[in-house]
Image 1 (tube, helix red, strand yellow):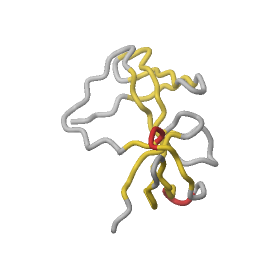
Image 2: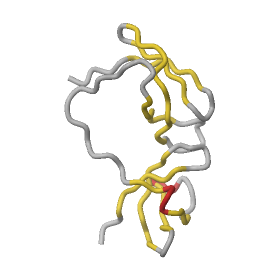
Image 3: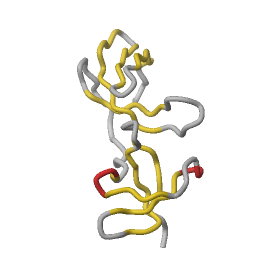
Image 4: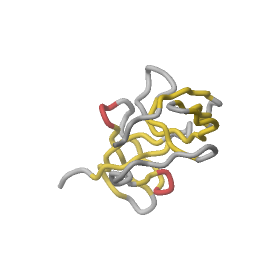
Length: 112
């Protein structure tokens, strides 16, 4: 059987890619992508299925809550961090990430 891909919420609030290796009554055991963390158990409430691929061009607006694929430092894997679009000007976003009060300036990607 192929491992089920999931995303696991870390202590920092970011969701990281992992694979279910075993299922228990109230938790699952997961192995993280590229083995950046040891295999661990997490309650179901900290595990979600990855979203299905989006179709079409997303419509971003100011004050919209989004998730940004990034990492806090070079020693950890990339994960999905909650953020809010504070300013959208021409082809640039200014974001605030919730957990570390990080301000990011990102170019708007062309989804066409």
